[in-house]
View (cartoon, rainbow, N blue to C red):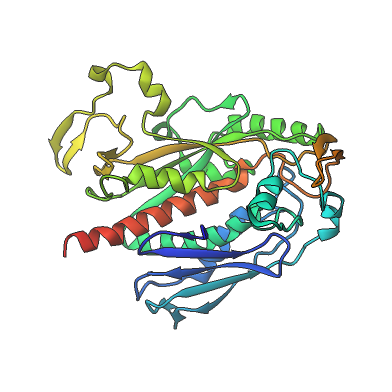
Length: 358
């Protein structure tokens, strides 16, 4: 249970951090979509561990194999299965916590829920599971490309270092020009220095990934319990280490009066649009044709290279020693994950909207 996401464009992921492989089955992808394997590989490379000094040094090529659902380079309309073997497991790095509960990890909750847990890197609870989401998200992006819909994300905050500019004042094409994935070069250098110092201090730090979805037509979303922003929030909150989601004006909107916050409608060459976009492109849970933008908050990575007090399975006090290869800050590698989940949500709702108009 809980391994499947979506209703029509539906994915099921599988695999553990130190198992033989991870992967995903994508059901509901329409036939005839050109499946560009180079694009999928590029998306996986953006999430790949070991890509810079400010990420985990685990070395995974994240080479993948499409086992079904594609013929002569195009989707067939049948389930697409993508398998991604693990190559650089060091399970012995986790033998010292086989019976210990790491602070702020899923060790204790998994043990209580299932009566058994894979302690090697957290097993199924590991962020390594997101490699399957990025692979599926790449397929969703290829589908959305036919509708000129695009999802872009970037790092907007690390610790107390935060961009003050809205996405409309940034050149998002610069996002991939630096290892922290911040489109502001000056702020990027400061963020990199902060993450690197945190790493040297054997600690971790959190941050924020901001995202924008452009090209979404009016009318995508479902009332009442399947509002578009509600599903986007669920998608983002399902990502490891996410602690918060806000869209549009978000929490800052509470500082405004209704006369300031309301988005006035106007008629122009595009049709009907709004003069402002405090709604974040969604009203009544349905897209209004404006950009959909949101922010996702990530906590500091729970594994730190310091000794911490905890208990073992017998309830005895123990010391958990930091060991293994881990990100000092997750947000640089989270950018493609946020994009992937956003693409999966929009692809699903786009197909649902087709049914609504039959």
